[in-house]
Image (cartoon, rainbow, N blue to C red; front, side, top):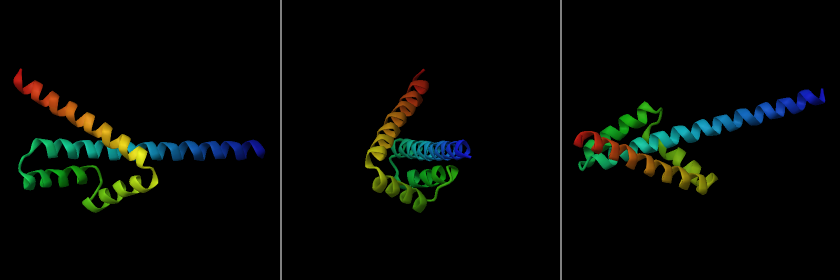
Length: 104
């Protein structure tokens, strides 16, 4: 019985870790796509429409994405900073690759 209890705890811990990882990756992917759209367009109204599409495609509304952002900020600002930094780097790479492919 004791071993069963330990195994159950380990399984719960792993599933929680996987859920957190998936949430982090979903937020990171969405934020990266938002940045790409923001950087690509000089017209705010066009960018905002594209961003709304990005959010919906990733399962967010503007409000739910904002709530997720504030959840990260309140729980662990270091993780939020890491996600934002990663999203910025990824967005710049995507934009650089887009520019490179156009010029060749």
